[in-house]
Amino acid sequence: MATRLEKFRVILTGATGMVGEGVLLECLKNPAVEHVLIVGRRPYGVTHEKLEECIVSDFTDLSGVEDRLRGYDACFYCAGVSSAGMSETDYTRVAYDMVLRFAETLARLNPKMIFTHVTGAHTDSTEKGRVMWARVKGRAENALTRLPFAEVYNFRPGLMKPTPGQRSIKTLYRVGLVLLPILRLFMPMLTLEQVGLAMIHAVTKGYEKKELEVSDIAALAQ
Image (cartoon, rainbow, N blue to C red):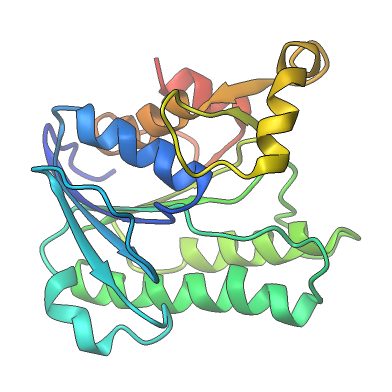
């Protein structure tokens, strides 16, 4: 069990996406988070006393910025894309290869780091199911747990409600928001505030499970 931290410094990916931005907003207002380094391919474009940005062109080659990635206690890996319309080869490149190369670099530079990785509800840990994205995500989860981090948590959220004020919400998702009151009657739903808080608490409190389903994320956010 890793040492729990009252305050910590975190690397965050995916800030220009909905999940990453929601988690970032929680980090910026939470006193346990002392500093956030956004690593991304394009600027997030917000100034904050806690915030620093590191722009990279390729997550699989961080050799030019390694000095900037040292001295961090946690990583919240929220970057990702939808598998819709992608071949398994192309999706593997983003959801497995990119994640693993990024994580391997951080594990080497910060071996005491706690790594939190966003996958999705129904991720396939067997890596053998019929659903392509679930197999690839399951393979990534399994590979991450073998890296020499202090701890790895794989978050498996489902339907998520954005935080008020978020900018990174796709038009189709905005349209779908009107259906949330109906959808939540049939499936469990999290807010991105809960997801962000759960990630923070994974560092400050820990959790007994390493693959966190929707109910686990909600419990850890308390």
